[in-house]
Length: 527
Image (cartoon, rainbow, N blue to C red; front, side):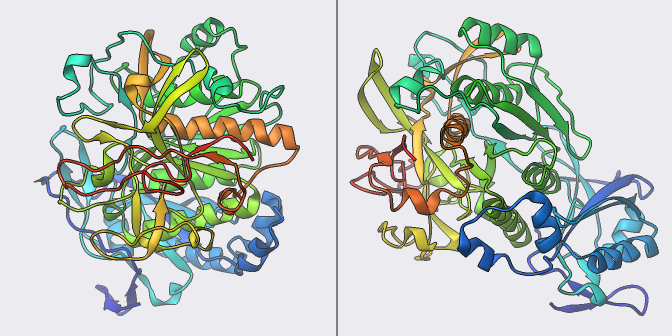
């Protein structure tokens, strides 16, 4: 760590990977130093979990907290630092390795040696931003691995798209949020995929819990009852958990409610016997991370599989974020929790627009099951064709090669190419795929409206539902399945036609025999 000086004689050091650029939007002179905010500090583990991971034997959340969580002494040092800087302790959690503190903006700026400013983006959203590094006292070097929440700019986007009229397919994709719904027939009820994809029979996900991460929007119980009754399915138990003050807050069908309802209805229709817990958090790097760690280490609800349909290109994240999220997913693998994440909806560009190829995070974490998209066509319940999802105008499955995470061992025989632009030998995305084209999408109900929605956002909860069925069938959690599916013959049905080459970059990847950076190993239907 590099050393810096604060306004006193105390020696401060920079938190590695905390560097951020100032937001490229309008700066405001409105920040009140007496306004309060919360910050999450991620604390190191007591000891490495690598040897435990090699054994492949899941442990309980309680065992994890005791053996591999943050130590009492490290937490005490962080709490003492907070108290000395007039910050109050909101929560300290050994398993999550998190200390959440709260205080005045002025005190937070001094404590972490940052300058915070209000900004306003093109959508009129006002948020705090910063540039440069976050600093901590030298006494906390090695103890604090990341600091989140000083900057609360909107961070991730939901990866879903609404079906569009046929005449609009050559127009730029509207994206999910803010797009007027159009239903012209077609689409699948999610439970149809159980038969079409040959999911396990005579199981419903009973005694399983599916966790869903949401960074906005909400659900209405009346809609869920209407929807599942219409499918002839008993409405699953759906519970909302508040993280960092966010709540279940449904608004209108052309907002983030589409993501929330898509996730719940797809997972619930595939595995109607499973309980569903939705973790609502603010759309910030702090909120996202806190929701993930809350779900993974939830000793009350104990999800065995977690679905994440929000993300952003790797270049949009700080290194401390990439590392902290990845370490959280690594912990999930030891706990026997499967993490499913959407691979993105804008092809190889991932909405960056710099002429280069990018992959989406958190799907690029090597401890996550990255979920790409296909276009599924059937006759009844018989598949007539399934190709890479690539609608016109760069509406396509995400996929490619990570520029941050090295190639994991389980992909060493998958013939993953090096990254097109950087030549980095990185983790290949996705691992698996499923129906995602909005034109062949999923029938859902959002805020009283029947809609057809697609995107890789639908594939993450689809896989989560599938994992819940497998868990019930096998009587144990599938856990970290990536190494297994890369070595087990017949676990996936290969998709060999199509590409995700975007018109903005004229670069990307083509499907082919075996693993590819469009649909991974193919459609997962056996574990």
